[in-house]
Length: 145
Image 1 (cartoon, rainbow, N blue to C red):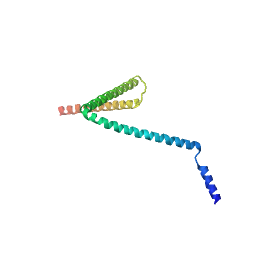
Image 2 (tube, rainbow, N blue to C red; image 1 turned 120 degrees about the horizontal axis):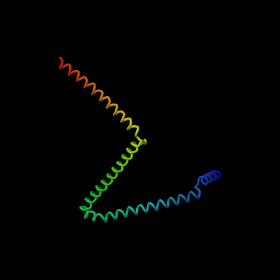
Image 3 (spheres, one colour; image 1 turned 30 degrees about the vertical axis):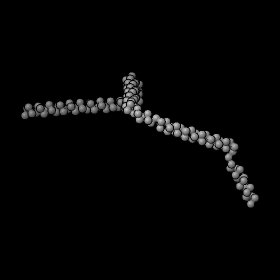
Image 4 (spheres, one colour; image 1 turned 90 degrees about the horizontal axis):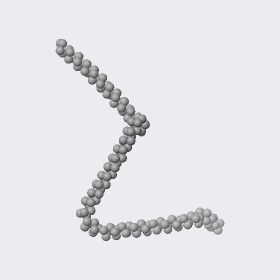
């Protein structure tokens, strides 16, 4: 029995955390509790401030709501105008690089699309010419016959 108790005591001593680990655990626990308390104080302060400001918000809401809508629309307009400006400048820079012979990303797709359009235009022109000859031939047959 004493031997068994000794082996249990040895196992507890072997698996016990070191002093460094215990200090780290205590520091982390203390910091966690302190942050939790600060979080609770912040939440309480927010609720109290909202309760105090609610009457003012209700009184001034006929002015604040349209002002907020106007501010939102102005901000959205400025942001979209800026975005469109950046997109336009990017497109101009890409076109400049393409025209000057540099190979911007996507230039090979533009070249392929241009060659396909040119091939299609050539085919349409040839078919129109053939159809024109066909119509001219039929017109001659009708006038002769």
